[in-house]
Picture (tube, rainbow, N blue to C red):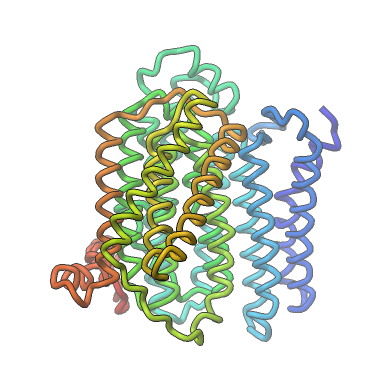
Length: 506
């Protein structure tokens, strides 16, 4: 392998790492420019590495001394390009956001080190190196969450995040130790080959620990309560955390998918936990008066959806979901300030006929699309059909309620057709990015998830008319408080790490 290619790979995380060490010693203006330049350089190098290997893009393992093993494949390339791009945008945004702040140099230093750690997580080809980068990411993010140490809410949220992250760190290290004991290697390519050639006995505990680690990182039930409380950190930190860090749990599951598919009970558990988290986040999000807290619960829901996709054995779809959510959420946080002064919009009343005809029409659209996909590809994922159907139904219902007559239904039909067509296109693209696994989800799990999402769909429609429904009003109050899970977590943290918690929403 070319030495130039090896140098390019190593320089991708080294550029922001060096910037993180040097920037705090520079004047504020030079530090901001240097940080942006380092992120841009890492992005350019990632593009060069991707272009270098693009014609075949098979797994490339770069072996160095000891644990210094990098792995460059399509998932790594996609995630590195995504994270470096978002990092560059956040660096550029922070230049004016923190202009004149006495801690600007310290902020850029820790943000660069966080970016370098995340990149190393994505590129690690050795499980112990991945663990070291995983821990470094959490510790650097902890410093960013404490950028304003005088704020009690910021200190308490950072402390909660610290405790949950240590649970994930211990789980990942324990999984690595068990794998080394059983297979004698932690280099991912060799490890996957040995697992494929042996039986799956003994992997249940390992995969359970890996799933626990991913749940802690990606804010899954019951470890999600720290995320909505981290609102006292600078907005650029929120943008980078929600767009480039919290999805690391999903990436870990994608990376270790060859191990996970050997243990169906863990896959089923991930699917159910992801579905429950998605449902909780989607409901609570609708009730939050704070923009940033609503975005935080939106992230909880989206991460649950990502974990659900991994649990159903669809890593390609999960990767596309990560990319789409990261770009959207970075924009949402960086643009959150401009929405405060926006004129409030009246809620669109939902007509009963729109709900009935919209649901029926979407079912026909999805049935036709799934039939076409089955004819061309030979198989169709039931969860994919379910998700696409709900999206199409929502489009038809909203447009059917917005505009009377055939015009509204025509607009809704165009939106629904676009949703179905784009979903089919992305589904095919995901299969090319990461080949589908041979894992077949449990029928009972699929029924449970279908029931959950159908209920969620109808419940969200009911929440829009909470003022007219006594049951919806009662549930609205509980959802506004996060169903009190945050309060329970705060009490548990207070017993574990005594302090005076600030008054925060659940």
